[in-house]
Length: 276
Image (cartoon, rainbow, N blue to C red):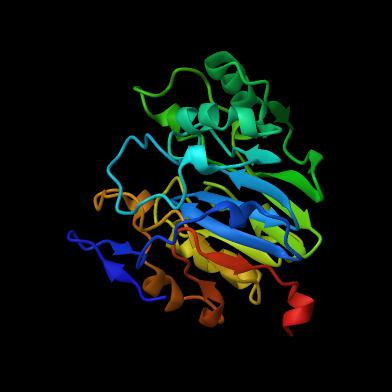
């Protein structure tokens, strides 16, 4: 896919590829579709999971169209929420998808927000805890993103590291790791080798940062890096939303494994053992 530039110079995807019911149907493999920003739809042989979906009501101007509207989603086996920031935890989307979603999962703090704010009985989990959604085994991985403690405006409580997480998914077709928004942690460099990473390369001090992204990529030199948290928000002054895939390619080991998707475009998951 070619990288384009917005009027204010941000790297953006070529286009949005609309998703229909076919994205949720039973298939004979596992597909990952980027929803824009930090959201994804994973369809693993008919088990459908969205991670951090923000399909409407984003509180900043966007550079992209969403690939699907909430009313078009037929069914989800689960929604995974990494943390409480508005670009990951969309109250509007979570509420709109309530009737078609079997379960919501996240850290205990996020599950509490779902109950308190939306009347949704979410499943709160410990870091490292494992659970199952359909045919997919899922566990929470550690993250470090409690930036609110440094902001007088947002320091409404003492935020703990365990209020934020990543997710590790074991599907019948391979493993997917979603580190989530996080500063680089040493333990993130010593995970089992995933078959794909939903890769945040934001050069922000409360995200992995470009140097951190290069280190993580080097720790898993053959794993495809499916880029997200870029090209979606019209905010060139915010490093969090301004990753440039070309800059990442120039620095990572085996740059051909950098996967740049259009929103809505499907990526077929393959075990690394089958790729060699």
